[in-house]
Length: 114
Length: 113
Image (cartoon, rainbow over all chains, first blue to last red):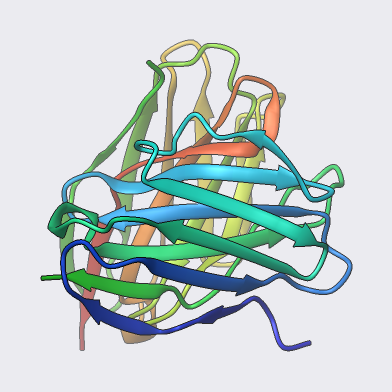
């Protein structure tokens, strides 16, 4: 199995630009999570989907952030417009809903907003 | 709101020594406590977890203890090896939802040969 695939691995952009991060969960998993990791705040849950439906988006910082999951094999996290304080590593994770909800993380997308 | 405190933020040990990382949580409804290991440039991987109905769980050199009364849980690594060097995150479920986790800020463990 290829695991959770994220793209791009690294992105450098200028303030005000739109950023789109992509995630392909493990085939057969029905839950998908977007996390943001910074030195100051650690790993923060932004939003998670169950069966492609957003369940909890209370962690999304503000309206500049949006996430979609149009089908079971693809999700995007969009930031528009981006700001320097959005610089972080963004992780996508997926899991199979079962008694043990092990999260399988992708390798992350490191975003730098200048 | 709910939070998870993790200590220490960095830990350096000699190969063969033990390492202990401690976490406290605030949500009394939390019932699932996993530990994840993040190696440099990679996503985190689950290494061990414990549910609220047990006080201790062991898997080879790794053990986790849970004290629900005090709301704290700990990771113990014995006979540490250089490949144990990584960032370790504890987490607690948000209420009874095992899929919705609150993570600690991580502990960077360095094992010196």
